[in-house]
Structure formats: C-alpha cells, structure tokens
Length: 433
Image 1 (tube, helix red, strand yellow):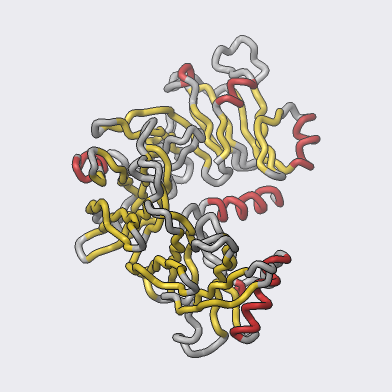
Image 2 (tube, rainbow, N blue to C red):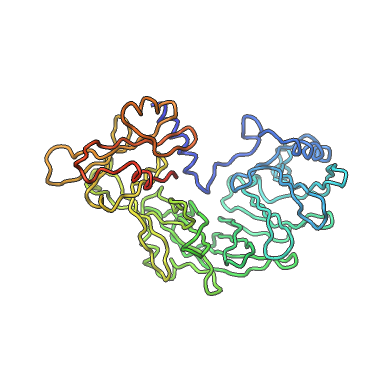
C-alpha cells in the first residue's frame, strides 16, 4: 500500500504536463540553495535593493531559476538577469521586478538596471535570439485571480534594459516553427471569439508578426500543449482543449508560408480527436513525432459498467494532407505512467482488467464462448527497487525502471498458448511516460 501511495503522489506531479504547479521562494519551506556565483550576484543585488526582497522562480519552462547568466549584449563580459519582488502589502510594490547585473573585467558584479515586470509571479523565462543577431529575454508573468498571463520581450543594450514588446498569452513557446534555422516566438491568446495564434521574429530590435492563425474552439480552456513534430519534418504545437464532455486537439505548424491549423480547415478532423479527459497528446514512444491518444472501450468491457470499464488507447499521428493515421493500439495506464502497445496477434483476442487486491494490470485471453475465468497471459506491476527481491522470487521480471520505481511483468508459463509473449516482446512494447 505504501508503494501505491508513493507512486500516485509522483504520478500527480507528472500529470501536470505543461501546466506545472505554481511556486515561488516564499511558498517553499526553504529557498533553493544558491550556487557560489548566484550568491555573489544576490549580494550585489541586495546592496542595491536592500534585503527586503523575495526571489521569484519561474513556475514552468526549462529554466526554473530566478537567475539567468549569459552574454546578452555586445560586450565580452557576462550579465545576470534576476527576478524578484519587494516584500510589501502594496500590490504594485509586490509585483515582479527584473534587474540586470554586469560582470566587469575583474570579475566583480555591478547592478546596472531594473524595471517592473507585469505580474505577481514569473510564469516562464526564455533567453534566445529571434531571427536577428541580438539576444532577447522573454518573460511571462501571471497574477493571482487574473486569468490572462502577460509576456514581455526585453532587450539589453548600452546598460539599459528595455521592454520592446508586450501582449497577453495562454501559450508561450520559443521554437523554429518554420524550419528556417532560427527561433521564432509562438503565442496563443484568448480573444472574444476564440483563440489567436501568432508567430514573432525580430529585426534590428523590432518585433514583427510573421504568421497569424485563428484557433476556433468551443472548449472551456486549453489544458495542455506539447511541442514536437507533426510528421517526419514539420515542427508543430499540439494543443489539447477541454470541452463539456471531453478533450479535443488542434495542431499548429507552418506550411506553404502560412501558419496552418488543419483541425479548423477540416471540421471533422478535430471531432475525430475527441476522447476522455486526462488523455493528452504525447510523444509516447520518444521518436520525436507527437501522437494523439484516442480512446475506445477495451475488448470485453462495456460502458454500462463504468467502474470496471478499461479503455484502449489508439495513438494517431498527423499525416498530410488532413489525415490522422493510426500508429498503435495500447493500454495506457495514466496512474502508473506507462504505455503498453498491443501486439498484432492480440488484436480482439486479449482483454485487460485491474486486480483490485494488488492493483496490478492483468491481461487475459478473451473468449466470449468460454465458461469460467479467462486464462491469464501476463500481469504488470510497479514496485520499488527494495520490493523487487520478493517479486523476483514470485516469478516477476523487471522490464523497465524510472528512478526508484521498477516496472515488472509476470508471464504465463503455458508454453502451448501462442498468445503468451516473450520477455523481449514485452520490453519492446513498453514505454514509460
């Protein structure tokens, strides 16, 4: 039972996807430990601002540090960007601030410039070039009680930090969406009639809009997105939206010099992606191509018994022109964090159940004409490394691991049954999420 409680807690964190849990230093029990360089930067910062400040750590994105260090101007030495807020009951004074510190030739840090951000928390920070040879700081901000998030694009030059562009956003991503070898900024924001997607690049410090596409949606909200390939060559953003009865997906990519969303070009295509909530787009097999999970009732199950009903997940990838192509059928265990793709010889001949006592996933040979229980083919369990000794003695074999967690399988020893898989077959069809 302890193992299950531990894993469910871990799974709850993993399932947050792009909508990461919000936090900043003042919401943690103890602040993250600073490196030696960060400590030197922090000392210089408080010499300028005073000690009554709180560092602000991004809630999402690849960079989760309040400090970003690099060469962001034309000078040879490095700069540091620090996000923080003053400890004050006044909302304006308590908003995020951005400070730039410069390292001189002797290696000493000096405070150069600071300005106010546009929110109470830092949502994400990205430092990148956007088509020209200048380095831009893209910072997204959120404020408690306000749904719209705001991003600002900063340029640091001649000792001055300047905000050169600002707008609202729901999605904020830096990627080479048009495959021209340079990064662009891609945003999606809500409007009165739906959502609007835009692609930005820079030219000499000026931010230009290069592509725009509507996302026509009747959903309540965007709940997940992932960046990957729509096929072998198209960089794309896959956007999952929550409606009244489930999830649907839209795709954004550049083709024929336009930002395209095939799901609004062909209405039925978007409807084809409808499935239960919780099943989000993913590169489940880590091949770089994002797949869309579409659910249906597993063989031998019925929606009439909802508590016992388990779903089969079929994974589809986008295929030009305006097609979804099935890639694999699988059992997707969201709680335990794995996908097991169904071998062809199992199609319509195998069903799956959850052992309510052990909480293991059990696969059975399905024969509607058979009397009594179906023959068990294999079962999959999740264990800690310490538990594997006992499980090995019970006939289980490890097929994958993730940190302290081990995924193990126990196969039927019926050598006369052709549906029994080999250990290599199980490993080749098993994907940790």
